[in-house]
Amino acid sequence: MTLSEPELKALMTAGLTGDRQAHGRLLSALAPLLRGYFLQRMGADAAEAEDLVQETLLAIHLKRGVYDTTQPLTPWVRAIANYKLIDAWRRKRARPTQGIEDDDEFVAPDQSEGAMARWDLDVLLSKLPERASGVVRDVKIDGMTVAETAAKRGMTVASVKVGLHRSLKVLGMIVRGARSGGEHEDG
Amino acid sequence: MKTDDLIAALANDARPVQPGLTPRRLLSFTLLGTAASALIMMLWLGPRPDLVMAMRGAFLWVKALYAFSFAVAGAMAMERLVRGDGKTPPLARLTVFFALILMGGTGAIGLWLAPSGLRLGMWLGTSYGACSLRLIVLAAPIQIAALLAARSLSPTRLRETGLACGLVAGGLAATVYAFHCPESTAAFVASWYTLGIAICGLIGWLIGPLALRWR
Image 1 (spheres, each protein chain N blue to C red):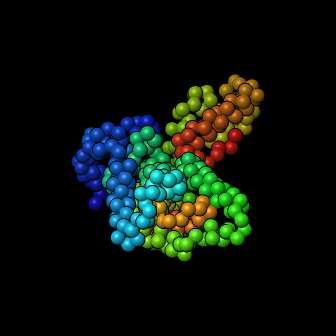
Image 2: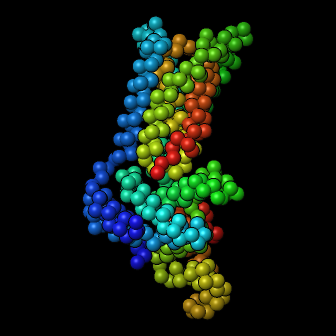
Image 3: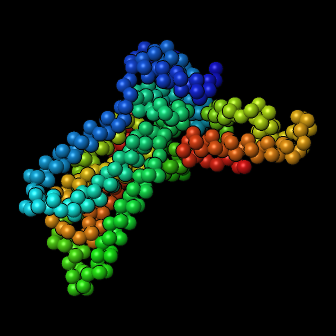
């Protein structure tokens, strides 16, 4: 049950007004995403990842008054999750090569594969028109060539290229807008 | 504890949250710290003897405004950073930048225009050795209050947040100190006020990762 950013945010906003059911649904929806996120980064230590899932859910619950409702929810959740992850690493001191003191490095949105990333990608692509998101999926995610995509979709090579370029630009703008200065998509 | 049980317990605990928690928390803590700082200033140093006269002039307010602009910049940054996913807004950097340029530029021009024999005196005043140190002492209660307020929220960039706390503390302490300080040149303020505020910022930056860790 993957919910989109607006749906998650709506649940959060409802929860903030005291809607217990919405708050519960929010946490239930976030739990699997966080689980994937931590599993990927903690190695295969499922128990430890689950501890972090719980700690993060608790932090989201306790600190939800801090969340700025004019901002998207996902980056906030990710920032809290990231903080909990760094905190766990600090306690373990198990990642000395990662420059634990460098907060920027850690808090920067991670673009690697993973549940959160894939989830974000789906949310992002859903903001494009269907035809455009299909082209982006074919070329950038499934690794088809421009010519193959053109053939598959009955478009000219030029129009695939133009469409791709525009879509990536739009996605870049959405990402930058949502994260106030995140990383660039290649365009 | 199973995660599902935790979620059920947390959902059951979901009381309404009053909006505006962040600015209220930051403001109340900082005001309390500043009141403590002002009290220490009054008891320890006292206001300048000619305060009433000086308050009619412009330069006391220039000093206070200069100092206050660092606090404003720090507060703008804190308001974003304590939430966890926020970053220092460009306006905060710009505020610091222009304050430095304006006061530094005015000070430099003042020195340049002055007869060479007076320059050293204008720059060092009568209290250059004490100024920065006093600022750091006066900033301590504000620094502590700001760090506590920030830690009670959810900062994730702990050094940057610590720096912002330090600027708030140093800026407000220097604003308070302006009512004691008898100096009257921009060169003095641009050097020693700035040094004191910068050291406060550095202290925040250094202790941020320790002082701001929250669970």
